[in-house]
Amino acid sequence: MSADTPWEDPLVRCREVTVERDVKARMRDGTELLADIYRPADRTPCPVLLMRHPYNKTHAETFTYAHPSWYARHGYMVVVQDCRGRWASQGEWCPFRHEGCDGADTIAWAAALPGSNGHVGMYGYSYAGATQLLAALEAPLALATLIPAMTSSGFYDHWTYRGGALQHAFVRSWALYLAQDTARRRRDHALGSQLGSALRAVGEAFWSRPYDAPLLAHRGIAPYYFDWIGHDCEDAYWRQWSIRGRYDRIRTPMLHLGGWYDVFVEGTLENFIGLSQGAATAEARAGQKLVVGPWYHNPWHQYGGGVDFGAAARSPIDALQILWLDRHLRGERNQLDAEPPVAVFVMGENRWRFADRWPPAEARPQTLFLRSTGRANSLNGTGRLAAEPGSGECPDVYVYDPADPVPSLGGHSCCVDVLTPMGAADQRAAEMRMDVLVYTGDVLAEDLLVIGPVDAVLFAASTAVDTDFTVKLVDVHPDGRAINVADGVIRARFRDSLGAPTPIEPDRIYEYRIRVGSTAMRFAAGHRLRIELSSSNFPAIDRNSNTGKRLSELEAPDWQIATQTIFHDERYPSRVILSVVAA
Picture 1 (cartoon, rainbow, N blue to C red):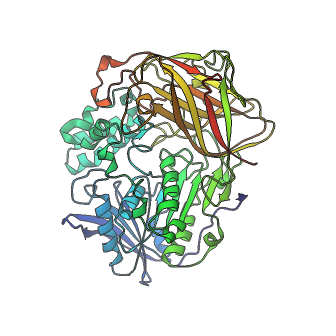
Picture 2 (cartoon, helix red, strand yellow; picture 1 turned 90 degrees about the horizontal axis):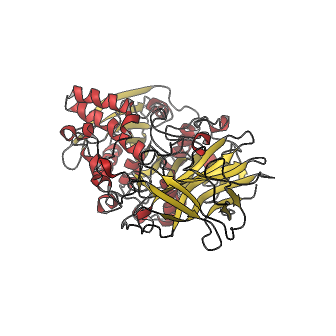
Picture 3 (cartoon, rainbow, N blue to C red; picture 1 turned 135 degrees about the horizontal axis):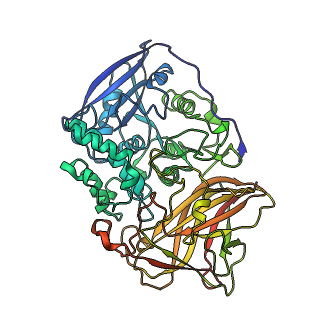
């Protein structure tokens, strides 16, 4: 891997742009979806750049990207369409359900528009990334390339749930946001106002049971939210829209964009790996590129919560997308031809590195073992990380009370940082708690470069029939700041399968394998690595009641306290496995 410079703005092709609004496209079932179209004024036939999303076509995700007119000035006919049942488009809104067919129909329609040269690409992040992938499964003939940003490989794991646990802050706030447009379309302005107020004060709603959402139930305004809660394992409801497992149906080159603190980063990485290995054609397999920066879900800034990642982290994405589009929609050679397919921003080093694959081929596993004298509770405890497992050590014990969960400080959530916990943040306020086990390594004598997945193996027992275990990887600075790098969770009943949950036996020791997360991080000399272990990360993750009841079955008195025991000795070597690259 080597350093390189970010991507620079390309030259403008046409300074004047014309705009046509509310252009109708008829879907196969007769439903009309409306779009705004931005054309270069020189009328030269050009490729089409399509965005489909549920957040108002007029906005066109400009909180993330340059305005569509900017892309039109660079030689593209930009089409921004409201999804079915959203804003100006006809039909009934149901997330994910129609995006494959509607996407394929829209691509064929866009390819035939006046001024189109017949080649269509797509861009957009979050749900607008999902619309791209679902359309690609239909293999539309005119689709030449995609740029899915900050989206996932499915809509159960790494979207609605993680490790079997509900991504509570994201899911509740997203549903409240989506429901507002439905209320507007129904002209129920009172309900729309209530939904807006509820979203702005959503922190209070996080404390209710996930299924207890009366505003979302009112007049059937958001039935999909209750479907998500009701289908709390990876069943047929989720599999019908899954991207993973169907990569062999996709024949499209893609530029995958992600962020190390993004809620969907694991799905982004999975899509890149899955398509690089299993896309339908050799050309598609070779045509996958991955770019991941230090961003959370409202991207591409140099400030990721409480950390400044430097000028190199500032948004290069619009310029990069034009380079990609020029290459795949115009056939023009440029700097991307000489660039390796993987570009990752290494936090702590604050520069871009390039590789031929993800994870990088030179990454090697390095194991650190959890150790203590049986009292790793809080920063005052004796927890440490060591290269060798313990022998004859007493286990660590803590109590998890769902009524008093460990607060989320930064991390991986969505979608507005003032409403939901996102990004890098100092963890010391949580590390003061006795229900957080803290294991800290020695001061590093030299830089440690971690690039790739980070996994944990825990040997644990609980007095409950179901509970959660949460793990964080933390970078401890010489001044004591403890900045979160990655975090993971496993809901105990999903330890063996996300599709077939089984309870645990109280007080029995189980082995739990947890994906803590993927990252690119330089832990600098003088810093220390830290692992935090607990049973809650709230409100990013919903509180486990410890009863084994499904989310839709919980009653108000159901919360139970659980006593958790973490083992770390020669028989039960609890540990974390890093992906380490030579610095």
